[in-house]
Image 1 (cartoon, rainbow, N blue to C red):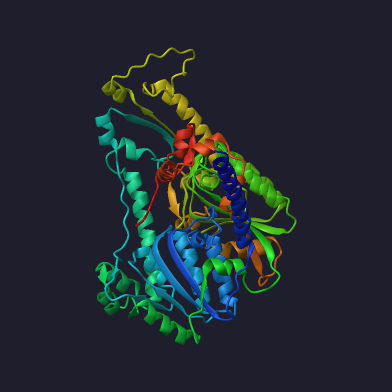
Image 2: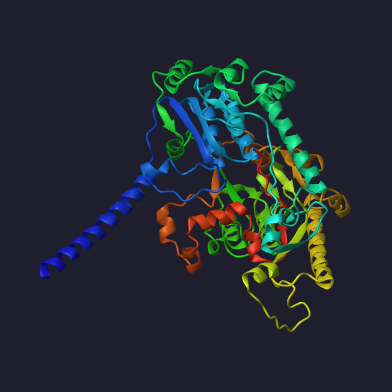
Length: 574
């Protein structure tokens, strides 16, 4: 028995020692810079989501490549590649890309920058859809295998309505809002699109489709009318796609590699993975440090660290910590605030606006809008600093709403009853078994109108325009970036390059001065996550299925209650 216990003890000690060795070996591996070949090909594989903020990474070779690169990291790599003599070509392989059309334009512009530097870019497509093809048209040549399918057939928006289902369950949803287009909740209270929703979404679809057709047709040396006619014939078998001039060649990967090696005048491919290139660093030069503060996700009042993990949502506490770090760092010459948020809690967005105003008094600031910067996501950018949006950014949505569910019918079906005792006339205004009375609706409308007026005032101050002018383009309406520029809700169209150009002027940086984007928050390894202080709520929130459901559904702001500055619908244009 003694030997048995001794064996267990020795085993535990060895396990602990091995764990410590393993831990520090992983940290050393994470800090080690890879050696790059003197000349090679940057391999840019884009698959799945392309986030703004860096996800938690596992610093081991078998896991590291699975950690998605952020938009800023891809931008930085392509910026370096255009001027780095070690990079002779780029291999682009987009597959099942999950990104909005704003991010796609950013990546496309980076690819074109490499091409303009005289370096060949070859795109290899695998089961491509419209997003993948849109990226690929920025390359010199596009390849598909002979048996593949080019699923290019235009764009669509599908709106789903649940009123019929809720009626069967005995559930009614009541939504109050200010703004003619602030029709959030329609999916729960209607069975089809309202005229206002149809007007906005038709406008969004027309504008975005025209933009895509213009860029793709120019890249494929066709007129817009010719490209529209071709898209109307899609999807295409590979042979038909080549015949129509949508792709350049039908070939397998080894054949594409041989052609690229010849075109770039390389002895071999000498593949350089994106993650290795980023860790090795670009061309050696002194660079001015520009902070890139990522503000992404639904806006919540509680700390994001207390609600499904920091970085998944946007809340005042975590953002304030990042802004203070930036403000206190004397090496930071300027700041780009990168917004990718549909809005959320009204109070939280106002708190973050105040924090961003404080930063703007200390550092030069420019806002760069990603796929979406709407409602509260637009509100927090009203510091008076320049706003830059992509042509396909969803923005605006200046309006306020409140909603609640009445579950009385469902409770009746389930045999559940509630008795309510109250003190205070409006104590049951948010009860889940009583409908809103005319008096309670009036009370809510007073609050909504006050917050809406405050929204108009903040935008008026930030855009330096009369409140009456803002009200005309507000009313909860969602605008694409190109439309927002026309109605003067944003200043410039473009991405990180355009934001940097404006920031150079504000920070007195010369046009050609090299810069490096410093992300806030930066990448965190799984060890940082494990060693960080964890609250009980955070530990409970590690169920990935629940976290994903709340993130994807956009219901997180509704769960916190209160007045909301949130976009009236989630738009995914396929």
